[in-house]
Image 1: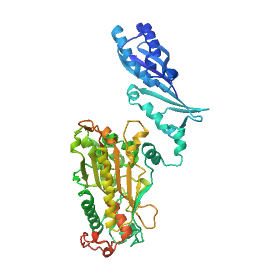
Image 2: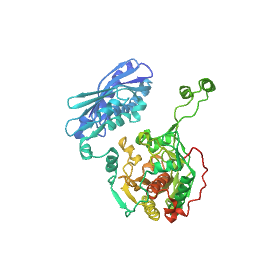
Image 3: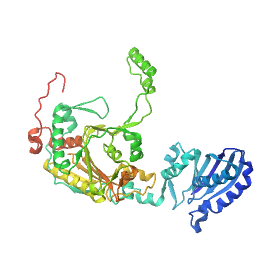
Image 4: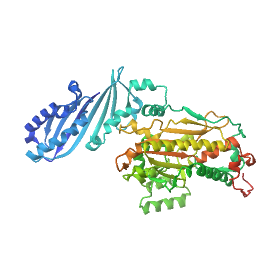
Length: 522
C-alpha cells in the first residue's frame, strides 16, 4: 500500500521567520524520525515529507509513505518535536493539524488485496473511490487530528480490504463462520453431542395450535404475543425445572439487571460492531413543553398520532433495550479489582424481557422480538470459566433427557463479541470454542430451536471493561443464556398440548388453570 497525504499545520502566529529551522527539521525528520521502527531493508516503506511551504500561520505539506509508517501516523509523529522546536525559539504554538486530502493506493493484483467495492462506495467517510488498472485509489477528505488519533483511517482500510489468501481459504463460508474459524479452533455448525431419537407426540405447527386453543394471541407489535394462562403455567414449570436442576445446583446467585442499557456500554462490548441492526434504540423526551403542547393539540384535532411532532420532542437515542441480558454484569465489574481466591463470581438474572429486532426473521413463537430468558454470567480463571460453561451444557442435556425431549448440541457460528476483531487487533485471548448452542429438535424441520447458548469470551470483556485481578492473574468471563420461551416452543413442538401425555417431571409442576371464557375468542 501507498499513502499520499496533503495536510496543514496551523500555528498561533505567522511562521515565516522559522522557515530555515523548519527546513532543517524536515530534513532530519525524513532521515530519522519518520523511519523510526522501519527495518533497514524496508526504508521505502517509511514516510517522507516530499513538499512543504509556509503561508502565514500555516505550514502546508505533503507526506508520502509505505505501510510501515503510514502518512497520517507520520503527521502525528512530528507534532511534539516540531512544537518543542518552534515554541522554544519562536514562541509558536501548534493550534491545529488537518488533512485536506488523503489518498490510499491499494494493490489488487494477484497475491495482494481484495477490496469490497460495494462497501467502499457506501462508506460516507470515503470521498472518492477509483479503480486504476491493478490498484484501487481510496480518497478521504477533511480529517481532523482527533480522527487520526482514533485510528479511523486504519479502520476504514481494514474494513474494506481482505488479503486474498484469507479470502481463498474462506470462500465457501459465511462471514460469521470465517470469523469464528480465524480467531478460534472451532468449526461452526459441528454437532458434538446428540440425544437418542424420540418419537414426537405432536405433528402440527405449535404456533398455529397455540392460537387455535387460545394459549396465545397475536399482539399488534411485530414479533410480539399475548401469552395466556395455560402457556404461562407451562413456562413457569419449565423455568422451575431449569432453576432447580441447573442454576441453583451450580451455585449462581440471583441479581436484578437493568434492561435499559446506555449506548456507551454497548460500544464497550463491541455489540454495535457486530449487530447494530438487531436492537431497539430508546430516546428520552426533550425538555420542550411547547413541542409537546403542539403534539397534544394536533392529536386532539386530527385524531391521529402526529409522529413527526413526536420525533421533534425526542432526544437522540441514548439507550438500547437489553438484547443480550448480560450487559450489566460487565459494567458492574468495570474498573474493579478481584482476588483470584474469591473466584469464580457467578450471578444470574431472570427479571424481565429480552428484546431483539429480527426484522423479516420474526415468525411464530420461536422467532420473536420479545422473549424470556435466564441469563447466567460469571468471572473466573480460564479453567473455571470453561468448566462452568461445560457444566451448564451437560446439565442442559440431563434436563432435556428428563423431559424426554430430543436434542443436539453444536458449535455456534455467531459469537457477536468476535466482530471487534474485524476492526482492530486488541491482543485479546479467545477460547478454543467460543460458543456451544444446544437445540431442541422440531418435528418436520431440519434445524432445531436454540434453547441454550453457552459462551466463553476469553479476555474480550475483561479488557474492554478494565477488570483486573489483584496479582495480575489471567481472568476470563462467560455466559449461558437459557431461552425459556424457546424451551416452551420446543416442548410443545414435541409433546403437544394434551397435558395428560406430558412427562411426569413437567406435569406435576403445571398449575391447574381455570381460563375465563369469552363469546368471541378463541
